[in-house]
Length: 295
Length: 322
Image 1 (cartoon, rainbow over the protein chains, first blue to last red):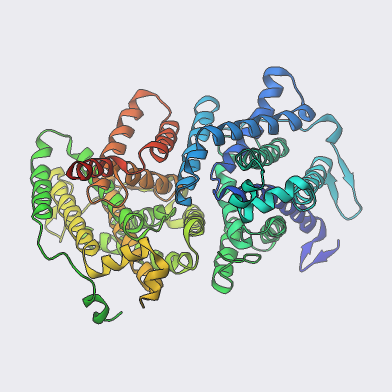
Image 2: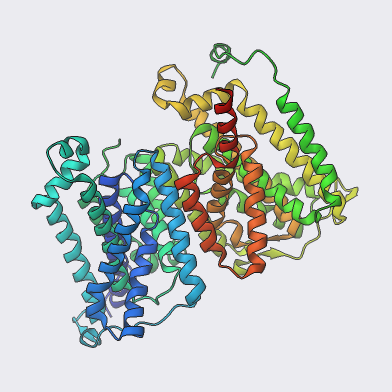
């Protein structure tokens, strides 16, 4: 059997794939965080909770309404986005003029509320959610066997990440958003409805988290704890990449997922702390982060 | 930092009697209360009062929001429990070992975290504390999910039996009151003035010639050490150290205590810890989901009572004065 550094190739490839999958979620979530932070100057601690809600909405749609995966892929992010927009309109809005720390604290409370709520009603054991019919099974690529659903998650997240990047960098709405990020007062003076833009941006960021949740549902169990487990790692990713750049958030997300996957092969004991170790090293060498232009 | 800098800071000249009266009142209350209230509840409360006060030293007086204080609290709790169970040393030495652990952790996390500001500071402390959580999850001496339990509290200085509830009560009460006095001294010292200057305007403090990073690290390590003392006392009290003490929820709880009581007020952490510990005791028996209520309380506090209970009262008094 082919080996690389004394590790069987299929094992290495398998872990790389898992790393790429995790990286997809890191990228999707840190992208949403970066978009929200860029405009609203709020670190959305509830981002993990919205990801969890996305997965739960998919599960509920299937269990209570019989709506399958493809419907959920559209409806769950919509629901999460609307939830986000309502929260922005009714509560988050009041915190804009204040220290950024209050935004962090408020969304932390929101995360506790959502997580605690789902834990109260659904327990912590996790609920199974099957992959859709069309994506079951696996494809033999010659050097490894690729489960179809995992391949789909990687492709879908790449499309979502670069689609978001394209919207922000290449469209008119994106131009408004970038302009408002630079100087919202001036943009408002030009007649752009900035408050609406803020609401939509928050909703969009939350919807991204929601869709990540739907993608994750068949891979991991749908559990109230899934959000808080991932959000802390995503924060470390964001510290490493710097929240200033959309592309930076995407690249760092994938990169760290892959590093984590490799770590599982070569030194499994450290696999769940490797991202934090990298964060510490980056802070020592490049305090502003890899893509950061420190404020 | 040299003394010349400290000399330039104007200290309040008239000594106010309020602090002395307050601390005397606190001591009196602590002597009387055990006759009415269950001492174990009081001791638990005192541990969290100290934890919140230590946290407030950092958030309230230096303006640094740490999301990782559970690492110091829980780390010290683990080491104290381990020292009592395995090394079988006297409790005061076990507590000292716990505090030293918290200080070392404070230096490591502090050096990294002060390299960034504001929300990044919060995220870094959270991530580092989570790393420590995973370390505790895997390290053999913590016994994973079971935690360290089933040890004797031992004899203080080899003489006073701490398994006697009232001995333990007076020991914990004395340590907490002394720590609160220490925090009060730190805050109203020239060092504390500089910390508040950093909170108000970091750039200006730098331009005045203070090496801000060193002051921040100093405050961070002091806060970590005192949080460690709180964790060590909690481990001694419950004869129990678990993963819950190092988990991020614990960091969240101490933030909430400080926020409810009033960030940057001396009495705030005492009131906040009282409210939260009382609330948890009530919720534990009521069947309501604790996390949900805590989350909701957080949101309401941030939206409506950012000054906290003590802060709002002080604000009202000040307004009445005109």
